[in-house]
Amino acid sequence: MPEGDTVWNTARVIGEVLEGQVIERSDFRVPRLATSDLSGWTIADSACRGKHLLLRFTRDGAAGRTLHSHLRMDGTWRTYKVGERWSGRPAHLIRVALQTPAAVGVGYHLHELDIVPTAEESRLVGHLGPDLMGDDWDPAEAVARLGRRPERWIADALLDQRNLAGIGNLYKAETLFLRGLSPWTPVGEVPDLPAVVDLAHRLLNSNRGRWTQATTGSLRHGEANWVFERSGRPCRRCGTTVRRWTGGDHERITYWCERCQPGPRPPTENG
Ligand SMILES: [Zn+2]
Image (cartoon, rainbow, N blue to C red; front, side, top):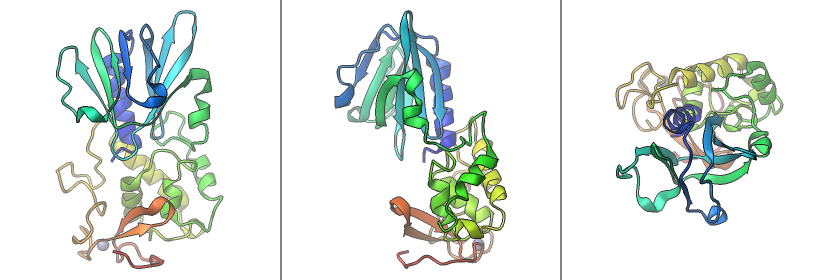
């Protein structure tokens, strides 16, 4: 599940391999960028903002450009050595390939792919709240933004990237479990909102630099999470069957333990 930590790790891996490299050939396989050509441009920086990836390019005498992409549920970037087989994903999912003398960066199933002047990046990411993985993380601002709609379910508010940027379904479910909060608690009734924000920040950052999104302290497969994707199985803490519910903004899935997370119930039953 690509959330803020995954995107941060992706940006770092691309940066380690491709930063400073000059693009020899670019291949865009989305209609709107089909005629775009980045050959001759240097990959200057690989950055992220929330769940948005920003590859920045420079070229002598030209204003910088930024390639924006969003991984959503299933997008990935891979890097391959020159001549190495692109074995990551099926070829029909390739959306962009950037060939350099050292390596090639290949983006699979990317969303919102766009090239903008670097000076205008804010058009794409300016709406985002404080970035949980960012050097400029601002917890007080995140709490203030969450508090603007006190009637909203905390589960929906945490996913709204305008409040704070980087949380997806996994960290939402795990943060609410660990704080003992029903996902349907109105934001205004959350007893300690700063503690919720602080916990989400610590969970994402604890997985900085690795691909396992562990929230339990265990990195072992099948043991890394408390409730996420564990519906029908016993709660690790109390043994009650973990449940799932689909709904709210964007019809997202919520996993929770009704004993460890008392409070408001879902408005319907759809298990
Ligand atoms: Zn429980």
